[in-house]
Amino acid sequence: MKRIVLFLATNLAIIFILSIAARLLGVDQWLAANGGNLGGLLVFAALFGFGGSLISLAISKWMAKRAMGVQVIVADRHASLHLTLLSVVGRSPFIRPRSRSLALLNLDMIVPTGTPAMLATSA
Image (cartoon, rainbow, N blue to C red):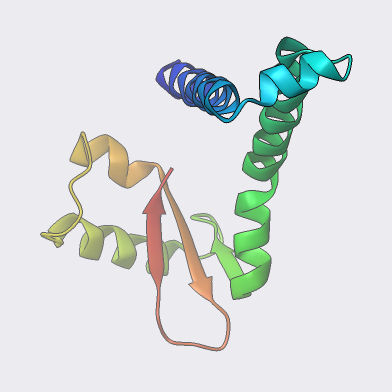
């Protein structure tokens, strides 16, 4: 729920700043003189802005996996590696999950193919 509220608040803040900038630059007067209105332009910008950000969010995880050439580690198939990563992440002073016991069980673990480096991210 917090993510949705932040998403909406950010996009509405951008539309608000866009409307202020358009008024300061005189875009609203120019639109009125040429048969348009600022409200219609802002609705158009909001539709494309919201739509573009939703598309970007939808494909970002898939694109990151494709770009880095990673392989998802599934606990069933890679049990020993999964447990090793869980123990390493549990001891790490740099990772501060909200609840260590729950966060360690919900890790998406990926290993870049062709490299010995491992990456574990909590979802």
